[in-house]
Image (cartoon, rainbow, N blue to C red):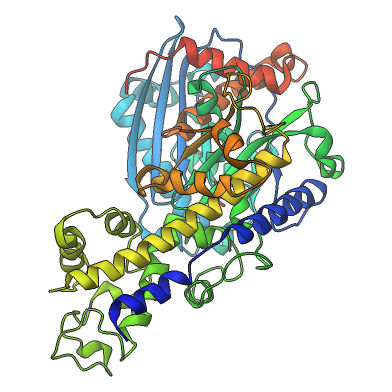
Length: 533
Ligand code: BGC
């Protein structure tokens, strides 16, 4: 078979037409509602119990850490009292072996060590004086010397309070069985205490919640942000839901402040439709799942996020390389019946290794405008041990990479459309003008939205395919990047939690309820915007 025709055949397997998008949206809304009504559903719809309000005059130093995928980030935010703050941060790659360690301790002690290193590097005075005081005859430490830390932990957690929550399951390649069912804040606190660090884990936050907060701050207009979504290593969204729709709350622990009638819900949409009732399923998706650490779980995420798209592409390419009738990466000396004899591909090429192709390659290939697709061919040569790839080879790769990326974006649109429709935020979708009042604001973050060419445009195309949104509604949906919002969001929630704890349960820090809390944070940020990074 000619190479171009074969590549087109594979690319066509990733088509996700209008009818499927609409079927997806309907089922997504059904699973959202199911998750609001009962526990143990595939889409978890986790209540976040965020209710306290900052009063805007805060002073002091707060910390945030972010564990969510490839990197671990530590940051501190100094609130200057005159309503400005400065932010300092550091980032370290998480060693692969720790993602699948035998015990929680191995991972969490590594995290605590990074916090120690950060303190020593950036807050030496504070750290040394703390250590000296502990060693002195007076001993102990004063409450005000302890850093409150917001812990952005971007995995599904059943939250029981602002700094308590048990891990439901790992995602994104992490697999430490010992952690499942344990309180992740307590695990981190234990390792922090073992190092005698002056740090209290004050708040537990999902990255989507932090993104929602950060976007609320930057987004212009009065409408408020509806959704914070991540399309990065993993995918997920947190949105503002009406309490009256969250019927399962009645049967749950956790105290709810009902004064605003709203709460942020962490959907954990990565596990939308694990049962595959509406999701597209190619042989490549199927095999990827079977050979993953969590088969049958995070099925939506496995079709959308950066952790998986490179692997889908790899499997699709290998299927062509193995097909004796398709001349991909081959030359006249190749023995088409033996993939490893294909002289253009090195024996140890990552093409033949699970997870061998990075999702960034999809972005490179899909966006390659160079003459003869030179950039793609060079990357194949330098990174993937595939030499002398022809322009036709690179074109085949580009076709399939684009199809995989486009399907991911159209699936992402299913989640966005469902949240917009289910919350009724769009109202009448015939308004022709976009105003500050009728705009529906969405904050996004993650490598795919940031780097995959046309990701947002593909999302928008699919949104227009949904009749409840249509071309007019699509224009009213504003999507804005909230870069690294999760860190800032977490530090501010730590601040709020800290205030609430010091003030005691009946203080007025709760008076404004959820909306007051958000406004307080936005206010605070607005006044503290002169930040130094
Ligand atoms: C996790 C979510 C997280 C998302 C984005 C998913 O794998 O389950 O908690 O928000 O990745 O980081």
